[in-house]
Amino acid sequence: MMDKIETPDLSHISSSDYENVYEPAEDSFLMLDALESEIPYIKAIKPTICLEIGSGSGIVLTGLAKCLGSGCAYLSVDINSHAARVTQRTATRNSVNLEVVNCDLVGPMLSRIQNEIDVLVFNPPYVPTDESEIDPKSPIALSWAGGLRGRKVMDRLFPLIPQIMSPNGIFYLLIVKENDEDDICKVMKSYKWHGSVIMERKAGREYLKVLKFKHVKM
Amino acid sequence: MKLLTHNILTSKCLKGVTVGYPLGIVCHTQAKEVKVNEVEFNPEFISRMIQKVDWPALCKAAENLGHSDDLPPAVVDDYENNEEFLKKAHHFLMEIEVINGDLICPETGRKFPVTDGIPNMLANEDEV
Image 1: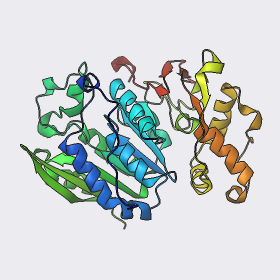
Image 2 (image 1 turned 180 degrees about the horizontal axis):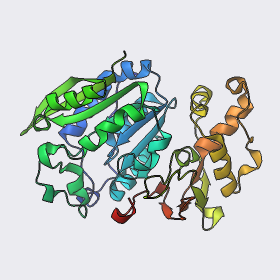
Image 3 (image 1 turned 120 degrees about the vertical axis):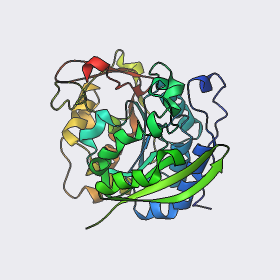
Image 4 (image 1 turned 180 degrees about the vertical axis):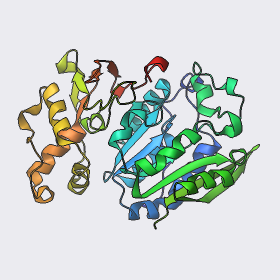
């Protein structure tokens, strides 16, 4: 019972909100299911700070926060100001204390979160697209368009992982097959972070996976 | 925006800024733009968080908001067992919220607006 993630109430989000904010879909639910399966593990590392990058509707971090409770600070960032506002409304609606910052990845906090993040969740824009489809003027395009191999945004985060994560920290990343799991794990391995698939699911044309990364202790 | 969040925000992402910390806080009409929200007190969590907090930056933020009277100027020894201190830390970190105002880069004066509790830390292309 304690280790279940209840799907947050999203009834406050209107169809016009979803014109500018990614509407939860199979990928969001897979991430929630994967995190639910990880709750005992997450509890065991006693997280102090949980961060979600690209929180969108806020469904994932709100669900996680509701399950883990007041022993942790929950922080979400999104480059899309509409999404930042909707995330905040989702947290309020579900009586969760969650902080929202409108920014690009962790840029404005990088120097202050060195080895401080215990749980990091990222459901990135993973769809392989042309560069031209990453339109900074379209918040909704930014939520899914991932450029070459769908890697454009996540590849910017990977080098920051060894800097921002705490020694026992866990990084959960949602990808699709086209993102090239083997190559991602190779990149992360070069930073001494080990990745493994903890859940996968076929959803329509997409083959979705949640990867879990941990620091490899010497 | 809780002061906990303010405690980890910097303007270092701007070109030419070396530290960018702590950010100043200005609220236009203080009475309306700072809110106190009651949050469940979890002493064990606050104890863990205190180790991560930049206390002088928290003091400065509280001072900017005109709320500093009650905040001890430094972390006390043995804070884990000092409930009075932990409650104050909890109040300042978790309960005081900036609703509308500006965060100000200490080096360039660049303002980052806080609107409905959400800081906008996006920099323009020519600023990074």
